[in-house]
Image (cartoon, rainbow, N blue to C red; front, side, top):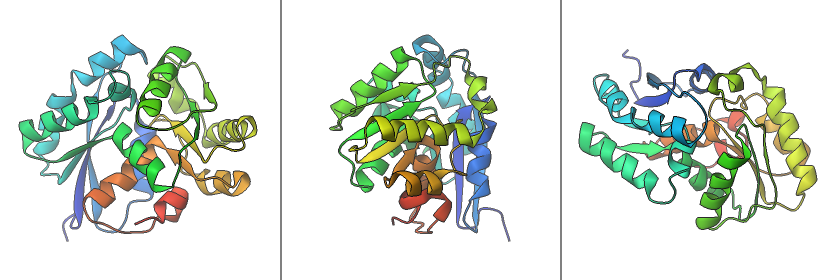
Length: 240
């Protein structure tokens, strides 16, 4: 039987982001396979992310040769820094270039937050304050309140790779202590490992948790009409 007999999903990720791709594979439903294409991100700042986004169409053309059913642009800051309208522009360009539908990590994150019923969101990330302020502006513009935000001040994209999942757990607990009334927690960065701790962070805070990598996989599956429940993805993974 051919790999990806239910769905073949293409993912465009920063070249340093091994963790995000492997998290997807670790929980992949039966019959779902992934093809990878990579972009170079010199720094996690506005200039470095513009360079990353300049490589997206070439990466899409590579994925098209694998006959994927959907292309996922991973790297949320690449669309939230330029602001509203960028997600649609990117997905439209990918579709025009390849004929394949596409989603973005940031749009998937917004959809996931809405799916869990959040209106106020405590936000943690690996990003600098400057990048976080762009994320706050984006989330506010689409209707969320952001009572607290904490960034780990990383600019080297590889640095997120060396943080174990317990780092994300501790970040989430700090967010909840700082904003206990927030409807949900958001942890932003597709390289920052979270799958191992998601059910425990939700259990220990009593709040739904959305993360970049979790939301984009959930959205990709739902976009393709696959309704598998994935317990490792927390509450979101049970929503169809």
